[in-house]
Amino acid sequence: MKRVITTLALAALAWTANAQNNDASALYGGATETQDFLSQSEHFASHPDKNFYIYLCIGQSNMEGAAKPEEVDYQNVSPRFLLMASQDFPKGVGNYRGEGRKKYEWSVAVPPLCRPQTGLTPADYFGRTMVEKLPDSIRVGVIHIAIGGCKIEHLFKEYDPQTVVKEAGWFRNFMATYDNIPYIRLLDCALRASHQGVIKGILLHQGCSNTGDQLWPLKVKKVYDDILADLHLKAEDVPLVAGEVVSKEAGGKCASMNAIIQTLPQTIKNSAVVSSKGLPSLGDGLHFNAAGYREIGKRYAEAMLKLSEK
Image (spheres, rainbow, N blue to C red):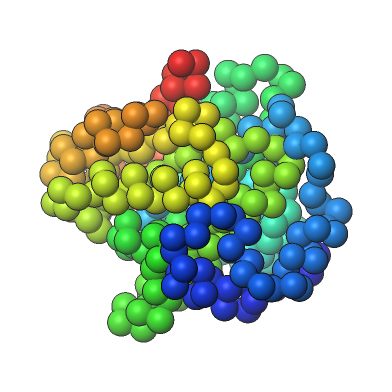
């Protein structure tokens, strides 16, 4: 599959300067090479499979996955639960045990889902629960893009990638895996996936880096609205589910943010918030442990199914 990462990054800068243009075609600007790829790729179908439900998973470190997968997490993953890799997963790197994943290609969603060095995430048991609850004819796919330590502003489509030089080295390394523009990589994957299946929802876990920010719900709505506009989706068809951060009872350092996160449905009508109550943490005050990720993933699935029934 032909790669055009540099072209995408340059087009993204032009697109940022013209943010009022909400046509997804603006993602590729005047990049003939990219447009040719999009029109000619055999991976694009003229009639997407309506039984292939695709979910976009975004956020910071808890969506990225801070707990190392345990043996049980590598086992019994349904072939109906798939991941479109947002970057290459080389064989034998980090927590990844497979033969290798290629960016933009689908594979069974065995952890890790975000990057080879990351761990278990809410998306893992979200997907497993969804395929258990949905009819056997339905496949579930996830697109997973998350950056430890990111603010919600780092997920804006107007984020200026040149400002990443002001960030800590470890953060710059994470951002570099998405060419410093996570939103563009998300759209790049989502546009491809939308020709293969139906985007049915968005999962968000973010908030620690915006603790105390009363404008956070409005900022999330901006990301949500931009995704819908750029992918030509309707809010009533694409619910958003967000999760609380580690609770005060579990030693959460950012637990005060949960009061703000809980207000999100007041700003985004077709949304829900899943509780972190009772979920165990790694003990660092920020991240869930493996058992916590399994349980919150199930809660995401239950909330998504409930919203989808409306």
